[in-house]
Image (cartoon, rainbow, N blue to C red; front, side):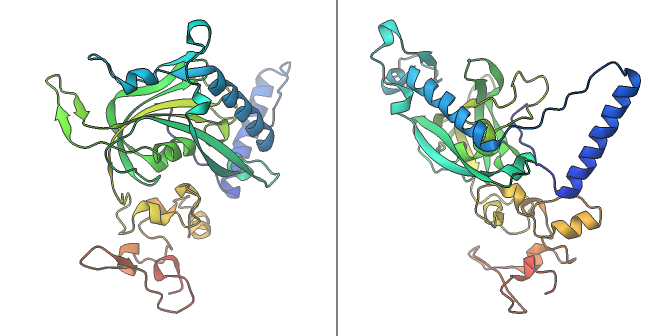
Length: 326
């Protein structure tokens, strides 16, 4: 499965990665001094974003989906979104550009190890072909979902036609953000063949610029090229509301301290972890968020109704569970 996202490392981790890369290159040179090694630096984030957005908009202006089948489903309809080009007999079809909604997500160039220190807004396009009957998950929730990923060319690179649990922070940032715009379904129906259906599940599609996907580092063998925009169809079945992945008493979404929708860049004790050689563990995966030896669950208060309060014993404005000095 290629959908899983990745975390760009801290400065210390970047140094280790760079050293490994240099040693690899030197080793290759020793094996064959006649080979020229060409290292291509990543392109500027703003340049790629503008190019991707123009490409996606052109696609949306020239394509449509089978909305008429969703409006009046035939008896054997499989509720799958089918994309096609507007031309000839389909010239009067409603264009995708006239049906999609958008959300804007700021992306830091540091995410891709670029040193120009800029934040570039990226536009994600999404469309709900069938509105789910339930609620929408957050980017911090575990979701029971079926999906298919493809390029704008139509080539499919990944997918799972049956429902599977996905903890959204582990996946591409744009994918998690897109899923949070769709509602889930209701009751589960078990079929004789062992598969399940979920009544009133949400069915949608999203178009991601590469800055919300793999940018210049696509998975090997995936068929995805550097800076490719991606398309995902999803069938959102269920989700666990208030998912607490690390079981520290705090729902994962509340561990997005900077509220940017990216849980993997919130790590209160990063310096202590790196200096101790423990590695990088963001708060939503860390049971001791300030690495003071006291579990986060023991530094918060949860009442009988499940409401959480955050004591600040030394009154310095930082709650105890994030304050190694308290």
